[in-house]
Image 1 (cartoon, rainbow, N blue to C red):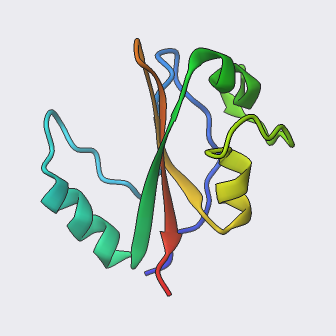
Image 2 (cartoon, rainbow, N blue to C red):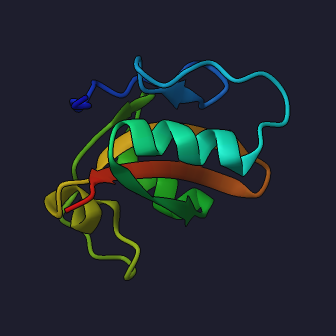
Image 3 (cartoon, rainbow, N blue to C red):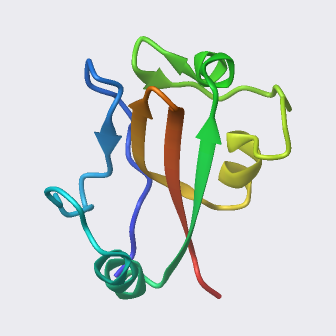
Length: 104
């Protein structure tokens, strides 16, 4: 199976998930998530952005590409390496972006 990039449009709470990502309610074990990644032959990475970093990336809930290299975890660097966005979650601790890329 091949997973294609999808348009990211966060809801009013700052959340978004890829249309092919299953809806998992409540606490989900890492084993279930790893099994899903294995089905698509993906490796994953989670980025944590503080509020200022997230504001550089999001505009009206849409993700925008930026050439800013504000830290070594720059989202653009991962997108350029072939990662796609699997989900976005905003919380009091910041914004978390779950990325996936094909295993070689």
